[in-house]
Length: 376
Ligand code: HEM
Image 1 (cartoon, rainbow, N blue to C red):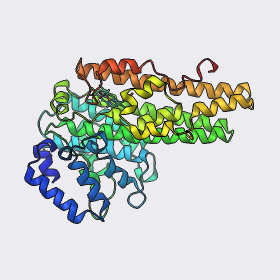
Image 2: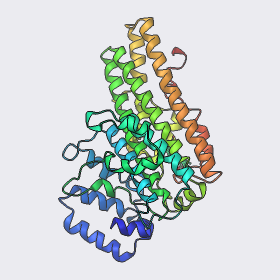
Image 3: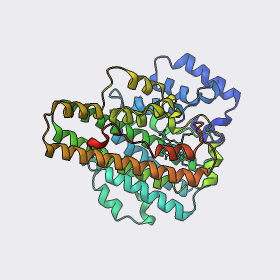
Image 4: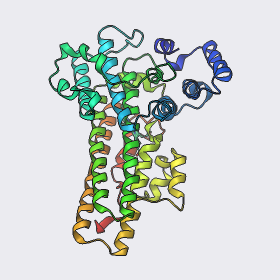
């Protein structure tokens, strides 16, 4: 199935194959959650459900992270995803992955892509089972890259099958769509981890442990730095290759990324204008969460702490500085994203139906902690 998709592109699956897949889902997938999730994703376009979540096979990845399966954290999954980019590119350069061969990067672009992806992986490793990976990467030459392929971390097989390997189902046959999908999946994982950090910060502040809250905020700041590397990797994509596959991704956009918006509402309630814009109408589940009367945020917790007058000036200063670092990290993320979009998109509209770069320019004016304003 995956080989077929790689040879034709998911957009072009013939009716015969679609019917077979629907039949398999109906007859065999009811008690096989992974198979069901996989088929739901593959059939999304043809059933009028094409969306960021299904384009990126997030339901399958989430099941793989589940404790019944590999029990991987979002952070760890991000390393697996980026390792897979390295593996795929090295194997393709060696002649593998026929069918996804159109528009392969030239050696200079490939070198830059691999360098950033390897750095991302090396920085995130450090467990005993990862061995001497980080130092190996630091001293690696291009000619020895092939030696690494078998050592790259990869999720174990689940139910006797490597489900992870089929979580890229490109809509086109362009080579670069593979790494682009993996980068967006990595982005989802990083923002899942960052949103979890924010939940933890709220709990620490509510418990009055400001030092622990600051530590968590700085963890999120570090994750933002890793997220910024993703734009450097995507910058190795040629604009004409990007427009080659984006013509088939209309309707799926990262504006639908729930974790990115969840991170935002956990920092503070966005302005009414942003809540009513497509930024939030594209994520109805997250919009419902922020409109829930029990919704809590870092901003709310800070305002309550201030009203209670229990915190000394020194502690406030440290918390305020940490929030400032997070705000700056987010501003840098948005600016890097916008620059990439200017280069790749020009004045075309976005696949999430915004007017494209002008929407992203407006986003630069938003602030996560705008309600804390002058008090910070
Ligand atoms: C070729 C590269 C890219 C272009 C041209 C691009 C373009 C855009 C555009 C035009 C939007 C506005 C929504 C829409 O109409 O689709 C958007 C939103 C978004 N993009 Fe990208 N993007 C690119 C790469 C990325 C990457 C690599 C990531 C993540 C690592 C990302 C994450 C996001 C997020 C989270 C939003 C929602 C922003 C918000 O609503 O505040 N994008 N992108």
